Length: 189
Image 1 (tube, rainbow, N blue to C red):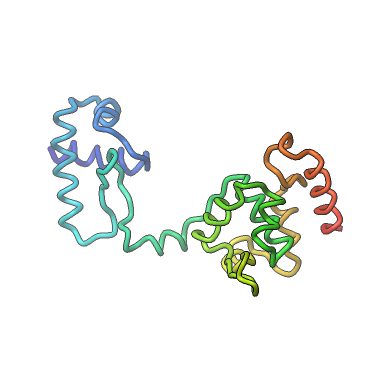
Image 2 (tube, one colour):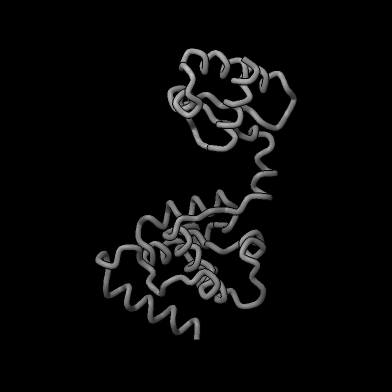
């Protein structure tokens, strides 16, 4: 049983994604019942330790860092952003401080979701403007530290090799895309 527990632990460590008992038993060539029994013991082993790792079994099984240690993970692991979110971040950086309503015009209605994700990752901050109707958005020190930007923030566009288009869907607003691309080019020069 100890050897099977060790093998299961290795599978969970290497895959770093949620697996079902059937996945683990297929990978190891073991019967699902034996895997389930060993896995339950392994979960108890981790729960009895006062370590930083745990096996979460909510939607399958995954070896992960305990919630109380996630601040360490955030410091050590890079922030991954999807291209549309990265483009929204670029617009914010180039035009900061920018009103959220203006950002929505430039990036479309998905900008609201992008802003929320960027706030959660600590890359931007958002504060009500003076009249309280909209938000002003700007980058944070974590943004400049993460992207290692010194001086002109427009270096980000070149560093990330981002195209000049602002909208994700070119058919959504082709004329606005053209205008926004021209505006970004003017700002870069």
